[in-house]
Image 1 (cartoon, helix red, strand yellow):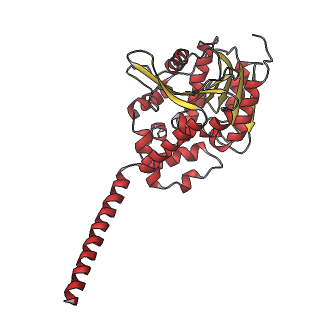
Image 2 (cartoon, one colour):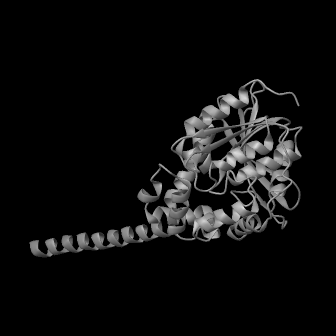
Image 3 (tube, helix red, strand yellow):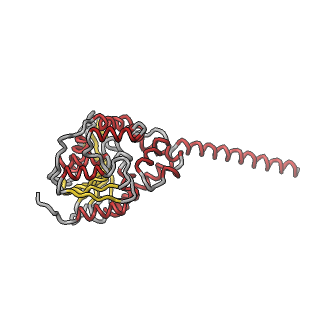
Length: 334
């Protein structure tokens, strides 16, 4: 009788153990398929942005184009407005998490997601930075933003430059960070040849090695490419890079095929150009080249020991320079 009782207990125990093991293995396989970690981080970033007084907002420009923004939950009329335009590396939430905490104290922040990033989308086939600029500014008009200063990084620099050119009545001051605005045709060809890989794979990655190559190219002192595991990079690609991949490739192909603008307009706004001295994507001599084109209303600030991703590697310096420049009294009369 005791042996039968013991056998019964052991059978139940083994059955429960096997069932729990199967459930755990299924759970692990589910986690492997479902990009839970990146999704959690993305959700935490949304909470972080809300904590700093920002809320998501969608604007339909027409029946074909929708723009998504992070905007002030409660606009303070005693603060100036600052628009942050992201680059190609990611959505606005992932690029500006080191900026919103500091800059939201001094500004009403508006963070558009460019077309085919995040929830901004169009059915139109225009892939130019001019169209991007028009969509950002027309959306801002719908949000009641009449005047603002502008901070734009990398690919966003092309868009921001056109915003300042096309809407001078809206844009007060301009900060351009690590951007290739003003590249000559020869310089563009030289830079593309130095990259050594297909830029479509870099900016629209499908594999962890593509993402590591992008991080190695854009960062100088940060070692994120070494310590981030493949499963996280795969998750990031699934969550952040699969959506609108075709359209993003078309944006890259447009920039590659586009001929250098020999008649690049000279902006009327005061302009600050901020670069890392170790930028491998757009070397700092391009900052001085653009400054010479813009003339006396522009100045250059070089941050030592950082690469292209100044928003990650030197966030405090970048925030200090931006805030000081935008809040300073105008030095020129238009």
